[in-house]
Amino acid sequence: MHRIVVGIDDSTGARQALTWAVAEARLRDAALEVVHVYDPVPTAWAYADGELLSASRAAALDRDIEDARRTAEEHAQTMVANAIGDIADLSVETTVVEGFRPAEELISRSANADLLVVGSRGRGGFAGLLLGSVSQQCATHAHCPVVIIREESDTDAADS
Image (tube, rainbow, N blue to C red; front, side, top):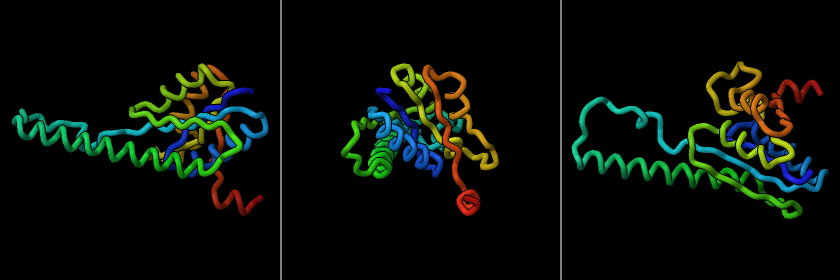
């Protein structure tokens, strides 16, 4: 095995997926690519109010969107750095991508991977789901084997 891709976000499941992927990369002497896809534009700005904007209002909105994008990218880079920590014994590449479809990015990157690792659920709003939309899409469409790490809850840890 030469390359493992792992998708992460701010979720506990993603951190557990990263931990698993690091251990597997060490076991297999594989390179690790850590991928995070972030949404650069706050949802409130994604919908116009239907009115024609003045040039000054449009310019101000463009500046606000650029500031939000820059802040989101900085947060994503920090999150990836904090998630990885010091992994001096591994070849690690971090990829932070601006976009709205993390599954598509991970599926694309799986074409050059031997294994794709994702958490079972990310930051989505449906806490009761066993499998999130990104992990489900990856399992269905990836170009390599996929490992989905089920988020271990406090109850699971107490039962072990």
